[in-house]
Length: 161
Image 1 (cartoon, rainbow, N blue to C red):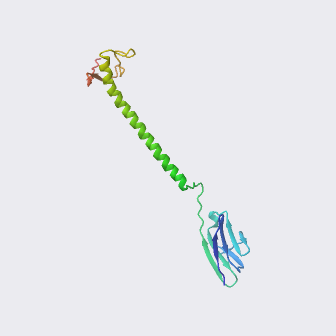
Image 2: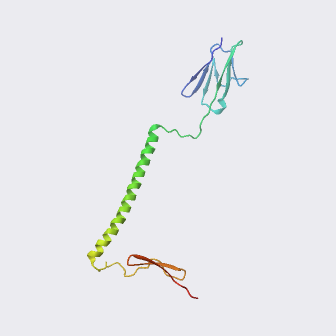
Image 3: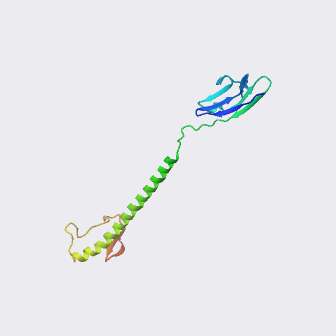
């Protein structure tokens, strides 16, 4: 009577068949990785997929081995995944903190400008020009936006040719 055992090893698979006289793979005589009564499939590849049959002259028994390997794969363990998640959370918190700081500093500058203008009582800072043009004026500008007493006034310049 023939029996077939498959043992998974660290570096491959070993098929054991006590009292075997030979091996076949997919119906063809197989001698490549045979050592005694065993077939040692080490350094597995997709070519090792197939039906392995052990026979002793009177009986035969077979096992189908399916090998599927991932090439160029990256193995992620729990520490790597947790590191990615923690790094993502830290980056998100830093971006949120930076956004908060920038928006609160803009609000503070607006509030301080009101206090500074009251403190200066009509006095200008020495480096501030009297007039500052935000939009360069040329013949291509049809619309111009300007501020008068904190109100936005939009005017249209007519260009006569």
